[in-house]
Image 1: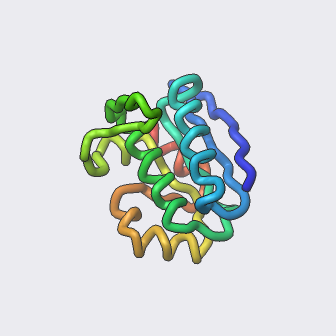
Image 2: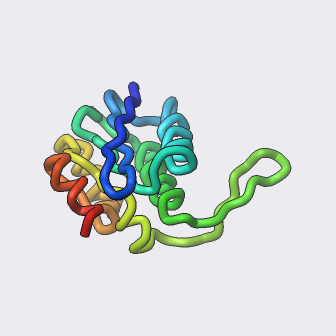
Amino acid sequence: MEINVSVHQAEKPIAIMHIKGEINASNYLDVITRAQELYKETAKDLVVDLSEVTNISSTGLVALHQISLIYSGVPHRVDTDGTEVRPDVTHSNRARKHVKLLSPQPSVDKALQSAGLKLFFKVFGDLDSAIQSFQK
C-alpha cells in the first residue's frame, strides 16, 4: 500500500490522502497514523481518495472509522501501556462534515455499504465535488 498526500488551498486547507493498493491488517495503522498527522499538522478537512484501493478488509474499515473519530475531534487518551482509549461514541455529523470519501472501486464500495459506513460518510465521484462540499 502507498499513501500520498496533497493539499488543496481554499479558505482553509483541505488534505487529500491518496491511497493505492489494499488496506488490510498489515497496513491499516499506517492509514490511521497518517490521518492523525494530517489532522494535527496540515488540515482539519480530509478527502480520502479510494480510487486506487483495490480491496479493503475489516481492519481497513476500522481505519476509516478511526479517521472519522479523529476528524470529529473526539477526545482520547493513551493508557500507560500505550493503548489509545477513546470514549464509546458513534460517528457524528462533525465527522461527516470533515471527512469525505472519493471514488471507491466497486468492491470497496460494496464493503463500505455492507459495513454501514456509507451512512456516515459522503462519497463523491470526483475531486472537485468533494472539495466544493467543504465550502457549503
